[in-house]
Image (cartoon, rainbow, N blue to C red):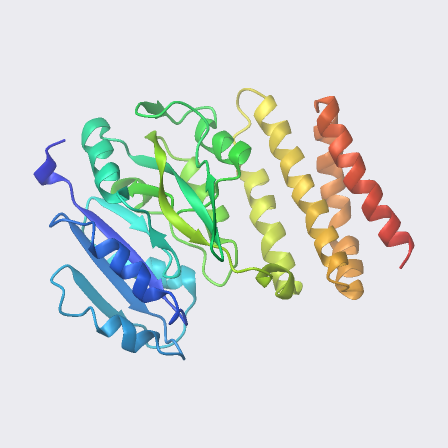
Length: 320
């Protein structure tokens, strides 16, 4: 691919991130060249976010839009995608930071390999503590072909469901939408992408500093959180292409059941007894059936892991 022909759109939804959005945008502007455009949409923020992003409106590569009302992350991402015209798309969250040197490395690898999807590492940022995270398991600087669930299997094994540590060719995701009104939209989106035929590569360096807000997960568990979280993984199970190697499917069931048990333990830790009872009553039959299918093929250490988690949960349920 010729360097001049490669264009990329960086899409940033903004909602109530006044403490972080300036750092996010500046981290991008200091790296990009004329091949990049930054599309920002304020999703009816109620803090000072709109005023902050307005400071960047005179930059030639920045376009700023205002949503008519608060529509949520998925709808905003979809709207930004529809407005863009570039060959490649990079979704970045407005409270995160583009890692130093990331843009140059991303563009260089796409030029060299002409990949449809690029996966990269990232850094988890919790307060001032930075932890390097792998976004892919495999060899860097080469193309892989997505077949027999290879792309999704890698995501499942590495727990890399994020969209912001990946760059996509527009043509590949043209007919894929973020599902509106649901949390865990990245999990659903990556499942949909995995059903496509494409070539993908791994950039073995961090491209994003992902900001983890300590304590936010436990504080925000409610019925919708539970339903959306479990739907995201049941959706993945139902859409997994079982036309070849069975090991990947059984491993998926193992990981999904492990997440289910983990969620129940989080609810218990948060002392939400009514929610725990309701979740167990509604979902346990389905997830227990997944476990029975997976258990036939699990390795010993995987069985031990699940049995420990199940025993811990059983004690909690009996004590309620």
